[in-house]
Image 1: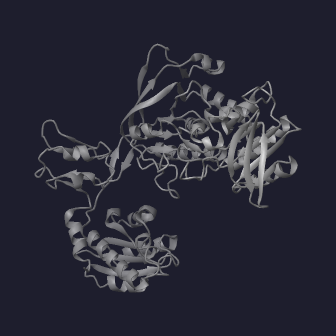
Image 2: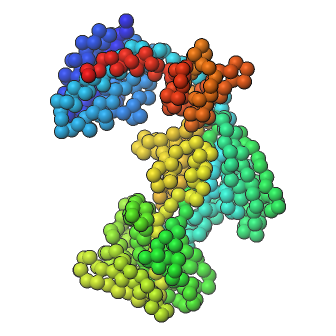
Amino acid sequence: MSRIGVFVCHCGINIAGIVDVERVAEEVGRHPEVVHATTYSYMCSEPGQQLVRDAIVEHDLDGVVVAACSPLMHEMTFRRAASAVELNPYRCEMANIREQCSWVHEHEPPRATEKAIEIVRCVVERVSLNRELEPFHLPLTKRALIIGGGIAGIQAALDIANAGFPVVLVEREARLGGKMARLSGTYLNFTAAPGLLERKIEQVLSHPNVQVLTGAQVVGVEGYVGNFEVLVSSGIVDSGLVTSKQAKSTNTEFTNSESTNLRTFDVGAIVVATGWDSYPLGRLPEYGGGEIPDVVDGLAFEGMLRDGAGLRRPSDGRVPREVVFVQCAGSRDPERGVPYCSKVCCMYVAKQAMMFKERVPEGQAYVFYIDIRSAGKGYDEYVQQAMEDHDILYLRGKVSKVFRDGDRVIVCGTDTLSGVPVEVAADLVVLATPMTPGRQALELAQTLRVGVDQDGFFSEAHPKLRPVESLTAGVFLAGAAQGPKDIPEAVSQASGAAAKVLKMFSQDEMTQEPTVAYVIEGLCSGCGVCVEACPYEARQVHPVWDIATVNAALCQNCGACVVACPNKASRIHNWTPDQILAMVDVVSW
């Protein structure tokens, strides 16, 4: 018979404000295998963890149930606490009575309390049948592969390489730099972008630990965390687009324009930094996008600002005197565009408007906006500087119509602060369009077996606790591949991803969770249904024994094989049918 301890968390008022936590502890404490039950305000705090450790020693516990938040938040926290006092960590489980109980039943405290009791009883039954498991140990290849040669990819490559580990940097374009290479300047510091990027590119190209592949793409990935085998295709590269500095670098590999070179790299970790693409102007006909030559997007306007011959509009080469900037063109518009905010538009519009005024002092810039989102150190002050020091006219309201009238572009809207209709005869209209996922993001996600969100950006494992990791172990995210962000945030996330890689490389070998699938050989008929069902390619039918086998290093414990198996030969350690039925038996129907 087990000796289980139950620890019910108040989580401040998140749980205790709805659920009667003292009653939960009292009711569950009557279970014949529960020898200790108590509550605490914040179980995840250091005093809360110490409470667990002390109780394990004092009551000679061989199992622990922590009734608190989601296991995604703190399961590892409590397993480490149990392990510290020599209790097998896989005899410690969490019962989710916050997200699955108190938060969804905030208007029904009595019923929420009853449900919490049932949830905890179920997990007690599971723990009583949990086996003591030991993690697997796997070899580790201490080389990283970075996909994407923009500022995020370059930063991640340099951080890892500077720590002494080899890096392969794969860029699909003919040169490094990504979208940042197309900027005329950066906000807060107009002149920083070109010089800063050139220095970074020079560092990565000359670094002895970095191997750069341009005009290349990842076309296949096999293996698992710590031991990936990546197939890279170096396709046709127009070497005329490559800077002389890059062409001279001994670390850059270019392919013959008449052939495709396939190479395989053994790496231990992958960082995805594929960046973003511009929203197609053709999808914004209501703003004249794709129809009126003098309606451009922000990235095209950056090129116009960079032009050494001076600022000229596309249609006739004249210097524009009246420029209208339209913010949220396609953003925050789930019906006609994308539902999300791209986060950087308010800032780069202010930058572009000020740069326009510097190049055309007698000109006038107008900005149509819904609201200003300038969160960041010095950001709001920067927007105010555009308004006050450069006389940029900000008009609160959406543009209702854009059409051409002779050589001018007429922009119609309403200033909602004054309630007055506004019509501007502009020489040039700049649309602040959304940042969208890279055009090959979905294909790459399928190759890497990582998820994407509803908008097509790569999904992080947890938005707060694991923001630079994907759900596929060993694959990390950096920059705008994970979602819209500006240069400082992209660089910070790249360094965060690099830190995760370096943490992995600091080990001599990989440690793999043992809660993976296994096969009962006597029940397996070798039908192969589970092989087709596994999304991680972790299963195959043995060619000699004719039974299903599991690659524990690839298994992500999703349970698809368990559902698919007609003979019930597929199981997951510590999630067996006996445990599930025992949990069901204690529920009050």
